[in-house]
Figure 1 (cartoon, rainbow, N blue to C red):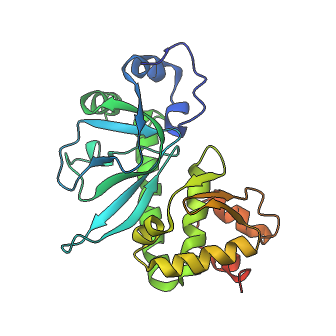
Figure 2 (cartoon, one colour):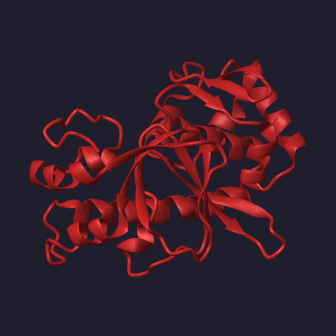
Figure 3 (cartoon, rainbow, N blue to C red):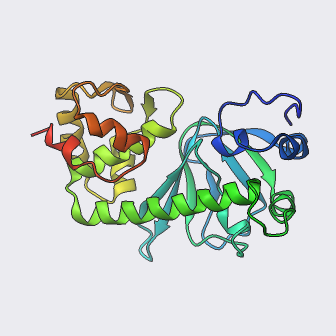
Length: 246
């Protein structure tokens, strides 16, 4: 539970954008929880009991094939919420949600989220209702962009997009993850990620402390001017950035 009189969250964009009245109603019910690496928040078909508002963690939304092979379709960090089906008319999700960057989140009981979402009577008036719908639109766009990038871009370009999206959602420029896990997220061979990451290190865009810990340069001083703009708006247009590697 958090203090309803303290608006200094500064971590989750949706919660930070609530009106003062909504914040005071929800704050007593927001529970800060630690989400460890690899924790499965839900499986396909699970009934959701909570909505999660990440602050310092990143959660991957994975589509699991019949063979059991997963592929990442979107990622959620401090920009959004886990559990859009709760307010979009469904009680379950068709995908798996797994924590891939350890950190914290605020969770809210599903019933309380629905109660606040429907409080405005379905009217768009700048409330949580409007914020959640706008976020869902952005999430759908991210899923579409991911699909296009995975279909038409090489591994170098896919890794650049993935790192830029991660950078947008991290509180620091440190990313703790293995190359094998990145390869599983993108649905490519680990050797391809190793080669692409090596090129990024040679270009001075990332630094590796060991096999599972990387620092991502936030200034991108050697990148094209528009690469930073792409990162900020979560665009798939990572082609120019990857050209620096060749």
